[in-house]
Length: 331
Image 1 (tube, rainbow, N blue to C red):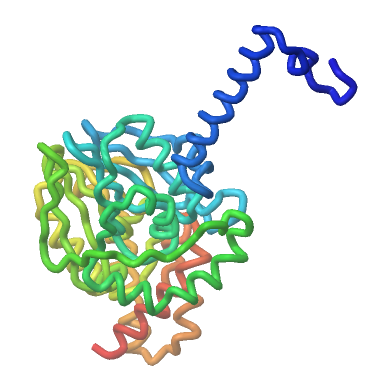
Image 2: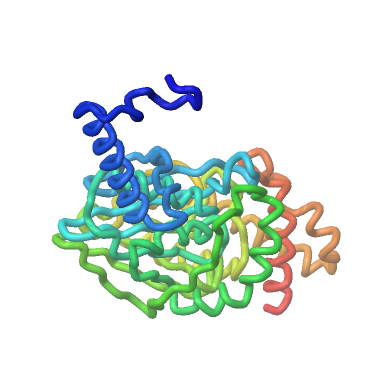
């Protein structure tokens, strides 16, 4: 070794030394090309892939944890997934941070090199859309309910400000990406020998709920129209939600992917617990309204018989009661 710590061979002029210098330069050149190819700031796409389960042929789901946003869970608190056709891939929801989205993209690349043609968001909530930024380099078409763009635009600043302190460092790279295509009614996407039926629903969990049915396997991604384990969250219309669930119960669906809960659930049995909870709230709230009980008391008391059945009950039940109370008192 020389005094400056470099290898003595680099200071020699032997053929071996010249070869070593050329080899070193070649490696640096290749490395430079590689870094250039993945683009500035994209080196983090080398993130370890998310754990996914293939619940049907070509249908993969990553199951998020039943938690609120924290720096430790990086916003990985909802279900995400992807569907592989013969020609292209569709992503369904991207998670609660760019880091979660990157891990999902890495999982996709572990299974296929086909282009990611579509990124579909089932609704507007941050734990389902904050990972969108991980996919912009793929230049997909971002798709959602026709009301998703306006709903996200209206809450964009609120979502970013509220969730930055909750995610801490995991907030890095988060951006709100509005859909470039809004679905009204029913539309079909073709991934190559595989069709996805996208349906925009009336106000239920939110006013921008979208379901994705893989016709090949009769598997439906329901987004937060369905919760399992995690207490349901009302951000739209509790009556409308029950109507939508009744409608979907009659459809020919083999299995469903909830927004929160096990990766694959049999339909329509998967909705029993949620329907029980929502119907119970409606019944109790109507009783309280008829008796003139104020909202403040109702929010403390209604739904407590369901507390042991759900995770995060204390975080969301009173909010659910307040939202449903405001809707039902105007019947």
